[in-house]
Image 1: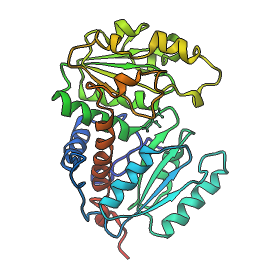
Image 2: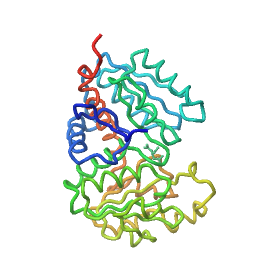
Image 3: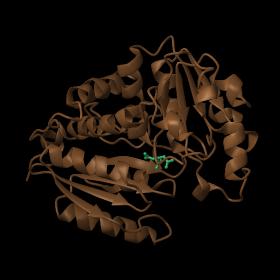
Image 4: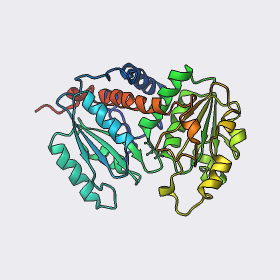
Length: 324
Ligand code: NCD
């Protein structure tokens, strides 16, 4: 396999499969464009026609409510046709079948494939085989990557805190199995956050080489002390080979974000969670719904980020398309 190139020959973003290796410029351009699409929820959403005549296929082989709905709304609000498919793409089906499926959908004029799969490499495989005018966007790849989540998290923090450079950001919980944590690590190490902390029981920590610049903490109290941002993660039971964590009650007692613990962070700290939440397992309900929570703002920002991304990768479509 050749190295992953997410840009077209003219240097425009074409695919988004990972945030790893992206420089700050394309990331900040996406955040700026996304900010343009953010509206308070009591107002009509941002809409446009920039994707009119284009087709977006959402292919999700893992359960998803918010990410799928978010990509679908983003595409529809820009005027695209949207296909939602629940088909098996990964090597659990035969390799040939993946590409047959993709070529079939491409023959129906699909312009963007949005893919979520539990196995690594599926987005990459598809990106290596689609026509030059087609884009592939990851909606979550195994435990490895969830780039639009990283972008919406960065947008949310920027809205609440301004710049990243002075911030102490604590990512807490099941980091080992979390694509959200990996994409967060990538985007915040690229954008240059003041201090990046990872806070987890030993069994849920990633390998040291995976997140070299993060400070590791084995207690939530120490890990969130004086933090500006507390990012909680869902316990990823579906990715655990064996139960590596204690029962839910024990976990909440030692690692759950309660109001008492949150008081250790800065007074104006914000609380994030990608959803879906396990209430009273990783986060207390009163904290999830409390004044420091920005969890719903993250969801609102998700649609804006995906609109910005679809516009960005489709912006040069006409030029990339082979003339007939
Ligand atoms: C996350 C996911 O599926 O990776 N959810 C999401 O996309 N909002 C996080 C999770 O499942 O814990």
